[in-house]
Image (cartoon, rainbow, N blue to C red; front, top):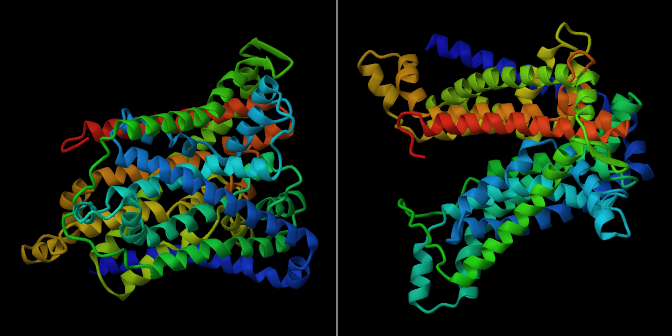
Length: 524
């Protein structure tokens, strides 16, 4: 018990030092900046309006497209539905800025599709931000909606069919009440994701400035940390609202203990239409990736389309190999440290009820409400001048904290489902809690641990937000080379870097899949 208490105190102090203190450091700068003057400036108000309108539009479109796609995958018997469900997650394996670049390459002034079909107006500004954000956010919305639909009880629909209740009344009487609360969570999640992203608008926004881009310009371009702190405080608002809603929304709806899966449609026309819809959407998703592959091997787009390896050689000569090593080191460090830290924290909070566990749980999920840009700026202000600042360890630390909450919740939910009396039984038999952890809990949750490792790795490889303010020439991750190459108009190099990140993340996902598939007790 003494050892457990010591570890709880250590974890509490860790989160206080890496989350609470840095945020207080950022908020302390707001008073210096002239809050009212900044918020009242036309440039700020314009950027705020742009962010809200673009994020709201992209959220509505993403959720509609994702809901239809989720219905096709979960509720029909179309062919290859599992493959479609996996394929649409590919955009989650590359940075958001790559989606913006993909649209530039497809629909820009010299874009592939612009030149082929002769589109009159290049896709910059509002329309480009919305399209890129939909590419970026749609897979997240799909995964959340598919999970919601998968666990919907089908028995009320059977009863309604027997009673002759028409389909539209079934939707408003059964489907909508079930979806209402989870759908609000999806809306919050997608809106926050788009609202706080600066990769897509930085690449394709043009003069349509959003709040994250304005913050990036103030901090990176002008080194104005106080103004950046004011803007960062506004970026916290939607994420904080989503965080509070999820805390208060404990009632997920009452369901029977055994859920009867809703039968999939056997209607040939519906299945055919679903297949056409999924193929069309997957083709759209594949277009930017195909453009990256083509652009990486042409001499100079669009002037000289002859095949060459010169761009790859030039990219490597400009440091891509070294920066890829940095990214892999960061991703592996974050994956190992983050998985161990998140699992131990979840073990305490899920398996040791009490006020200290509840407090630790609350602190552990606070990073859900902190956008990467805000966390990165707060780390600059808090850690600047310390021994860790400017090192690879700094980037490992900020990414661990940035991505901690989701893997922690994976472990928390998995450990919470196991028999709550295991520790009490072990105590009566003289078996320590750590022995039960090693011999029972870890083997029972090994697939969750693999997913936690994968989540940390993939997100650390592709992030451009928290690390933007903290990297140096020596420790820069490869994802930030996309911005650098785009500024130099070296789009071929930026495309190759995007492919490298995609290949690394796809490889780790495939390795995790194989480990799960061939592990003893696997059900895949």
